[in-house]
Image 1 (cartoon, rainbow over the protein chains, first blue to last red):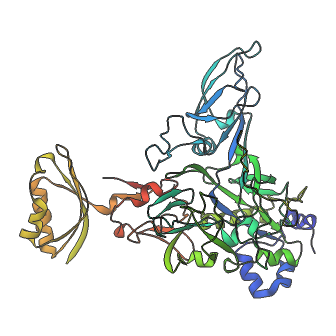
Image 2 (image 1 turned 90 degrees about the vertical axis):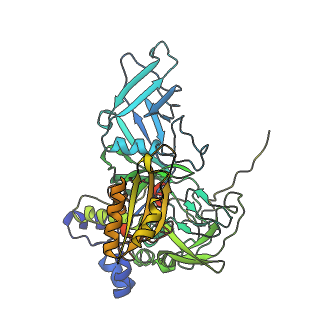
Image 3 (image 1 turned 180 degrees about the vertical axis):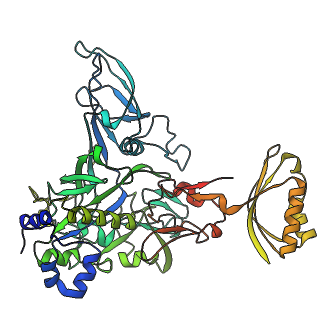
Length: 399
Length: 135
């Protein structure tokens, strides 16, 4: 048994033993759970994939004369942002699109530029055009503002993503006879291909399946900088079916995360364009797991072969909310590039970058080894499978 | 024997002449048309896989150039912007010729331009738009 305080002392002394979530697999295989739990202090995880419920808020500072952008309109490089706050506070969502983007009118839409791309450009230090309109008040008389802004001049620039880091995700396929364009990529007709989106054995919540060490306040790698778990993410759903090892067999837990955008990097916050679907933000997240006891290391050593997920039809079952799975596969099978669905061999692609996830786990490991990154005790747990917390569908009540 | 993939740019004035046919008839070359755009009154573009004896191949190319056709090798035409690729791998099953593969160990995606037929299937499905086509 170790405490986070003891692990932090080792980090400060430069004596900490940190390994990545794929390295710990080999270590446990070689030395066993007991020895590994004694030797290892921290397991670092990582994931890099499109995470749509991402965005950033800004305080741009007050202009002279003052303008109340609150309840007015505001655009960054033509991408509209949310202004329903005070005068100079604005939230820009990753999926927002310029008003003149043709969307899917020319099908499949290309969605070349949106909120996520603005966020990436800001993080890269590029100037961005801000255009705001307001109704004018006695204390905020100005009605129009057009200016270049740069992240370094903003008062606050904070990444605040309300749902990231899904604990497991579906494998998407298309049973219909035409190609479809989804957030899981293009799916060719008649089971032409399959796509998945998880770092599997490197993915943070799959390595702490009951959220024992990951909770509110956990310090993390976020977008190349430091962030924190703010809350459970939206659609958090810990109660789904699980295997004996406690690993969910379908999308389950999620995290809401927050961090200072000014210290993040454009390699780890990447604007992405999903053909026929929209814009999203590729987010890099890494979570350290403190090895408090044998159970923690045992869970962190779960392999791709032991992590299962459901094959889901995105032509009908998913859009029509028809429950049902076309079968279950594990991540080792997915990584071979081929799975069998309804007796057909289907080529598989990944939307989540495993090589980037590994880089994140390595980077976080190096921060910890250098003594730059101390671990935190969660200030509160996020709801686990015993909590009764569920993700509900909308019950419509027409009026 | 040589087998190369080339991009041919036809000037407007050659639009009505059976040039590719002559490659087969006069120079014993096998051709496989991978892609062609021919718009009246505009420059035409064709991507060919051209196969034959080295000597015949060179003579065929000379003939094309003599007619005023500009020739580019294909491998330069679809390129990957390495700074944009995140090595996710969503392109791998979309590519019809296996020009995009993922390494089983590093999980990094490689682009083998010699296998690329410039079908452009990867261009718009790449989430970061790292694949670019240049003619």
